[in-house]
Image (cartoon, rainbow, N blue to C red):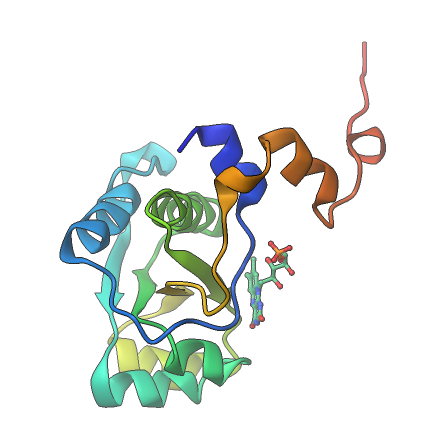
Length: 163
Ligand SMILES: Cc1cc2nc3c(=O)[nH]c(=O)nc-3n(C[C@H](O)[C@H](O)[C@H](O)COP(=O)(O)O)c2cc1C
């Protein structure tokens, strides 16, 4: 998928289909995280794949438990990475996923201590991945159309010049 189309058409998904993510797609999602730049290239993160009973416990530690419960893949970014590095890493994974037709959503952590206990370290971000419950068709619109329809502030409110 074209990069701008992927960015423009990606929406965060709250409901996933009961369908697995292929091993190849999972590998590319994780590799997109691995490839992220970080401050001084420190890469102060681990990607913790949370499944089974641990996934149920992690669901109880976030604001939207059902998003975690229904996800085919849950990745916690764990470690000492700062928020800027974590954001780059998370968005890389989510966009790589979207290029594979896999939707995703960041999950706010309600109980950081419980999340740390489940994941074995300080949790910087929790990402859920899965095929969308309602099929999405990124190629059904142009990137410009997706951009136009997005619930986002217009550039005229966001961009200013100095100098
Ligand atoms: C740090 C962070 C935490 C978030 N936590 C939640 C959450 O707990 N539950 C949820 O439904 N969405 C969560 N989101 C998703 C945002 O609500 C979403 O990015 C925003 O509404 C835009 O959604 P859209 O891309 O579908 O338009 C989170 C996003 C970020 C960046």
